[in-house]
Image 1 (spheres, one colour):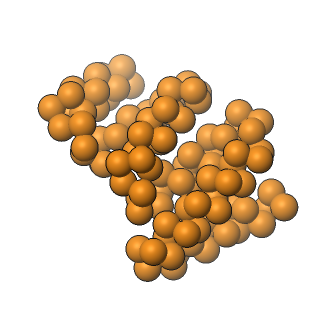
Image 2 (cartoon, one colour):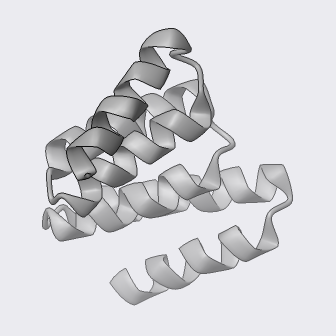
Length: 104
């Protein structure tokens, strides 16, 4: 089933490479499969195309933590706090600030 979701999401992105939801979904599939390098490629692509997509920063930060890349996770969360503030998403901002505080 997971490979079917992966293939579906990849196909969606082939048809529309700018689809933020499909890019996020693909990143999450990779994250959930513990393919952290692939997940980070997708999170970075998502953030590059959609810099105000807070969930990309949050889950990207979590992925970086799992990879042992704490300094990179801090930077990702900081950028995410800024993105959430730009978007006016107080909930996402507070979640990322809490994650950041736990690393400091």
